[in-house]
Image (tube, rainbow, N blue to C red; front, top):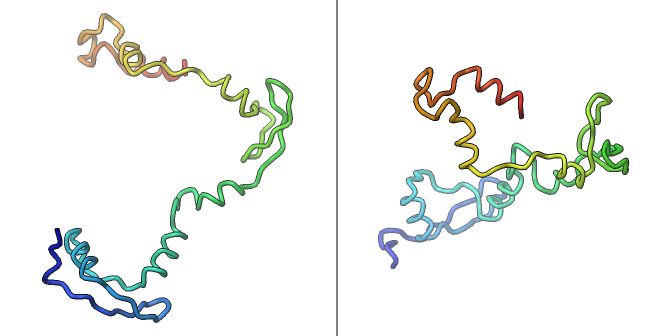
Length: 144
Protein backbone atom coordinates (compact mmCIF):
# COMPACT_ATOMS: atom_id res chain seq x y z
CA UNK A 1 0.00 0.00 0.00
CA UNK A 2 1.53 3.32 -1.07
CA UNK A 3 0.80 6.52 0.84
CA UNK A 4 3.22 8.78 -1.04
CA UNK A 5 0.45 10.71 -2.82
CA UNK A 6 1.56 14.04 -1.30
CA UNK A 7 5.19 13.56 -2.28
CA UNK A 8 6.85 14.08 -5.66
CA UNK A 9 10.27 13.00 -6.82
CA UNK A 10 12.77 15.82 -6.39
CA UNK A 11 16.19 16.27 -7.93
CA UNK A 12 18.90 17.22 -5.42
CA UNK A 13 22.64 17.93 -5.76
CA UNK A 14 25.13 15.86 -3.74
CA UNK A 15 27.31 17.95 -1.45
CA UNK A 16 30.31 15.63 -1.94
CA UNK A 17 30.40 14.82 -5.66
CA UNK A 18 28.09 17.60 -6.97
CA UNK A 19 26.13 15.06 -9.04
CA UNK A 20 22.36 15.24 -9.23
CA UNK A 21 20.31 12.47 -7.63
CA UNK A 22 16.60 11.83 -7.20
CA UNK A 23 14.99 12.02 -3.77
CA UNK A 24 12.02 9.80 -4.57
CA UNK A 25 8.51 10.11 -3.20
CA UNK A 26 8.98 6.79 -1.39
CA UNK A 27 12.15 8.03 0.28
CA UNK A 28 10.41 11.25 1.29
CA UNK A 29 7.60 9.24 2.87
CA UNK A 30 10.14 7.09 4.71
CA UNK A 31 11.94 10.18 6.04
CA UNK A 32 8.63 11.65 7.22
CA UNK A 33 7.55 8.40 8.88
CA UNK A 34 10.87 8.19 10.77
CA UNK A 35 10.60 11.83 11.85
CA UNK A 36 13.61 12.95 9.81
CA UNK A 37 13.21 16.62 8.97
CA UNK A 38 16.28 17.23 6.79
CA UNK A 39 16.46 15.96 3.24
CA UNK A 40 19.55 13.96 2.24
CA UNK A 41 22.52 16.07 1.20
CA UNK A 42 24.50 13.19 -0.32
CA UNK A 43 23.67 10.87 -3.20
CA UNK A 44 23.17 7.16 -2.41
CA UNK A 45 26.69 6.34 -3.66
CA UNK A 46 28.39 8.90 -1.41
CA UNK A 47 26.14 7.92 1.52
CA UNK A 48 27.08 4.26 1.26
CA UNK A 49 30.77 5.13 0.87
CA UNK A 50 30.57 7.34 3.96
CA UNK A 51 28.78 4.65 5.99
CA UNK A 52 31.28 2.02 4.90
CA UNK A 53 34.07 4.02 6.49
CA UNK A 54 32.21 4.41 9.79
CA UNK A 55 31.06 0.89 10.57
CA UNK A 56 32.31 -0.56 13.85
CA UNK A 57 33.83 2.73 14.92
CA UNK A 58 34.87 1.37 18.31
CA UNK A 59 36.87 -1.49 16.80
CA UNK A 60 37.46 -0.22 13.32
CA UNK A 61 36.21 -1.87 10.15
CA UNK A 62 36.07 -5.64 10.17
CA UNK A 63 38.91 -5.89 7.64
CA UNK A 64 41.29 -3.95 9.87
CA UNK A 65 40.56 -6.28 12.79
CA UNK A 66 41.94 -9.14 10.76
CA UNK A 67 45.08 -7.18 9.95
CA UNK A 68 45.94 -6.07 13.49
CA UNK A 69 49.54 -6.38 14.51
CA UNK A 70 50.22 -9.92 15.73
CA UNK A 71 52.92 -10.96 18.20
CA UNK A 72 54.66 -14.30 18.50
CA UNK A 73 54.23 -16.18 21.79
CA UNK A 74 54.68 -19.64 23.24
CA UNK A 75 51.62 -21.32 24.73
CA UNK A 76 52.03 -21.73 28.50
CA UNK A 77 50.08 -25.01 28.49
CA UNK A 78 51.26 -26.99 25.45
CA UNK A 79 54.40 -25.10 24.36
CA UNK A 80 53.26 -24.52 20.76
CA UNK A 81 54.11 -21.29 18.96
CA UNK A 82 51.09 -19.03 18.48
CA UNK A 83 50.32 -15.45 17.52
CA UNK A 84 48.28 -13.06 19.65
CA UNK A 85 46.91 -9.55 18.97
CA UNK A 86 48.60 -8.06 22.07
CA UNK A 87 52.11 -7.73 23.44
CA UNK A 88 52.72 -10.71 25.75
CA UNK A 89 54.00 -9.94 29.24
CA UNK A 90 56.43 -12.09 31.17
CA UNK A 91 54.22 -12.24 34.28
CA UNK A 92 51.07 -13.46 32.49
CA UNK A 93 50.55 -16.81 30.74
CA UNK A 94 49.63 -16.83 27.05
CA UNK A 95 47.63 -19.69 25.59
CA UNK A 96 47.02 -20.89 22.05
CA UNK A 97 43.37 -20.84 21.03
CA UNK A 98 42.84 -24.54 21.85
CA UNK A 99 44.35 -24.30 25.33
CA UNK A 100 42.60 -21.00 26.00
CA UNK A 101 39.22 -22.64 25.42
CA UNK A 102 40.10 -25.48 27.80
CA UNK A 103 41.36 -23.03 30.46
CA UNK A 104 38.13 -21.00 30.52
CA UNK A 105 35.75 -21.93 33.31
CA UNK A 106 32.51 -23.41 32.07
CA UNK A 107 29.49 -21.24 32.60
CA UNK A 108 26.44 -22.65 34.28
CA UNK A 109 22.87 -21.92 33.38
CA UNK A 110 21.08 -18.77 34.50
CA UNK A 111 19.14 -20.76 37.03
CA UNK A 112 22.37 -21.99 38.60
CA UNK A 113 23.68 -18.43 38.74
CA UNK A 114 20.52 -17.23 40.47
CA UNK A 115 20.62 -19.97 43.06
CA UNK A 116 24.31 -19.33 43.68
CA UNK A 117 23.73 -15.92 45.23
CA UNK A 118 20.73 -16.92 47.32
CA UNK A 119 22.67 -18.31 50.28
CA UNK A 120 21.44 -18.04 53.88
CA UNK A 121 18.21 -19.81 53.14
CA UNK A 122 17.30 -17.62 50.20
CA UNK A 123 14.96 -15.38 52.21
CA UNK A 124 15.28 -11.73 52.92
CA UNK A 125 18.19 -12.37 55.25
CA UNK A 126 20.47 -9.94 57.00
CA UNK A 127 19.89 -6.89 54.88
CA UNK A 128 16.65 -7.43 52.95
CA UNK A 129 18.49 -8.31 49.73
CA UNK A 130 17.92 -12.03 49.55
CA UNK A 131 20.59 -12.84 52.13
CA UNK A 132 23.46 -11.20 50.26
CA UNK A 133 25.60 -8.32 51.40
CA UNK A 134 28.71 -6.52 50.22
CA UNK A 135 31.05 -9.15 51.66
CA UNK A 136 29.30 -11.89 49.67
CA UNK A 137 29.88 -9.91 46.49
CA UNK A 138 33.57 -9.53 47.19
CA UNK A 139 33.92 -13.23 47.98
CA UNK A 140 32.21 -14.19 44.72
CA UNK A 141 34.40 -11.79 42.73
CA UNK A 142 37.54 -13.30 44.28
CA UNK A 143 36.42 -16.83 43.34
CA UNK A 144 36.04 -15.89 39.67
